[in-house]
Length: 87
Ligand SMILES: [Zn+2]
Image (cartoon, rainbow, N blue to C red; front, side, top):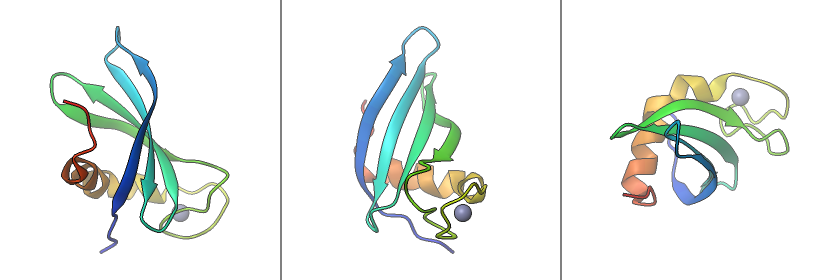
């Protein structure tokens, strides 16, 4: 199983009306991804995408892939465990 360690969570955009929150996540190996969260009232990942400028955390390629979609639950768990998600 792939392990993710979240070292940074940076808020990049919020749409309060829709309850959508966009975050930039940095993992311990310096890879990054963009997560769209819904808060209603609990945090739930609505989608997760790579930043095209950084290789994929899983397959290490730098072109389009869907790896992160398979790890939504793991990544959400890591984000929660990191304690970086706002209340
Ligand atoms: Zn990949």
